Image: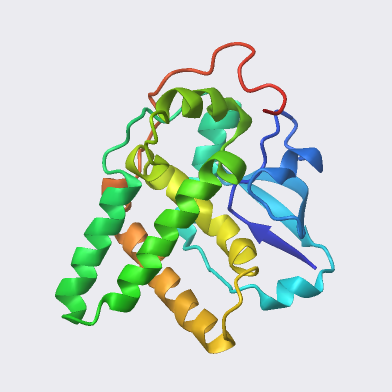
Length: 224
């Protein structure tokens, strides 16, 4: 089955727009393979083939809103094609965004926010652990090493741009968590509500352009 996705996930440098298998391993899961990429209506479109894998049946579905899909495409374009990086530290940071969401839900729902707080703590934990291993493009690794020192949490330095990448990987990561299906469905709903909050605050949380340091020649080549 093939489908069109707006999420960026290739760390390739292929100017022709065709993504090779090795290029597609940055943000897409092992069960996904980028067949090709095309430039349509001022944005990249990725055609993804889902390889046969029984485990994918247990994945929760996280439908990323169209505007945020475009953010992922722009993010990929800035880093991999224009060699631009997000200026760090970001404000608001991931921690700030999660706190703002908890405050928003507290005002909206009253005192029943324990479950929301638990989900947000999980997001923070997943982000801090996943960022250096599966969420960074190769060209960003040197910047990460310089920014994250002395036990600083990535969630206090990085912002919405990198947080959004986590939601591409979350279905795969959560597939390894042993929970009841009903719990997964509730979790899925809360994650979708959080994505809607990101979308509604897109202009506040996301950068319109990356004005951080340019990737220096030779950086980010090869694996750590």
